[in-house]
Image (cartoon, rainbow, N blue to C red):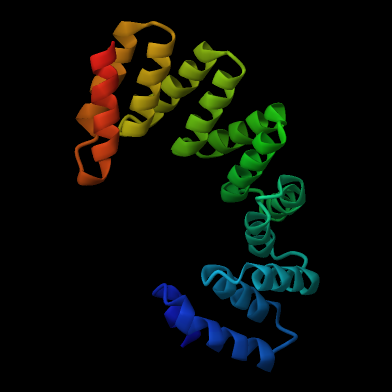
Length: 212
């Protein structure tokens, strides 16, 4: 029953049931993982952190517990990084953990390691649009707008239906003063972004076009 509530996003109903399971099966790490997840979803962060730590203590190979604990510690990047790294060691294809690791490394000012981590994501998953955008912005922060634009245009060739990539490529091209490329990318963004959820993206692209 707890899993049904969790599946439907009914975490308040799932929480007492997962707590009861954890009391009944104190030797089962998954019981405390599920309890921690429910506590996290209902805002009981200190309790969730404690139970993720308990899960890891009982099952050091629980990659998802390492990742979720790192997410809860993300306000303290040096504390989060080891858990993100361990999650990736346990599950090498865990790009969700890599993205969290990259964000923490950026917050710590380690841009070189962050770029490497984002490049690992894009190498293994060409459809990872947010990773390309973050990677381009990292290059931009270092003053290398041209490389940032190249990253976005390469990503756009692989993901031609991404309005966000097209918009960001247009923005980078505009920053570089390349009006022709900026116009082409922004018009592409407007052609792609046609759904109601893309209203803000369309507005931003149209405004930037007017400014060119």
